[in-house]
Amino acid sequence: MTENITLEEAKRMAEKAIEKAKEIGIKVSVAVYDVNGHLVLLEKMDDAAWITPDLAMGKAFTAVAFRLLGEKHSDSGAVGRNFSEAQSLLFSLSLKYDGKVIGRQGGLPIIKNGAIAGGIGVSGGSPDQDEACAKAALL
Image (cartoon, rainbow, N blue to C red; front, top):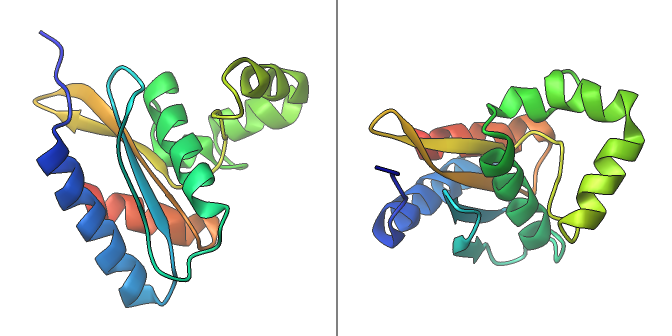
């Protein structure tokens, strides 16, 4: 049986991510996708940059699509290295999926009962800040 994230769970995670963003003094957008790559929730803090919703959605989508942990999405991690070594792969995936594939920190898979249930993406701070907010949402 496939696990899936619920709207109520997505709301609680977004609240935790935004609490962390406020704590560290940044304005973010938070996106939560279900296990099938469909958007469940998108929240943008007041005064967060206009592009942050799209970036958060891309990070969440990528976390679900690749089922990888966030540090593997950074330039120092596996996905980031693979994408930096094969820019045509990242470009092709980005084109194929309407720009949704983003190989950067701040996107994490959501694990529920030992299975992937979705993905969360945060954008608005540095890569490490986005990652901290996403991790805070999962605790």
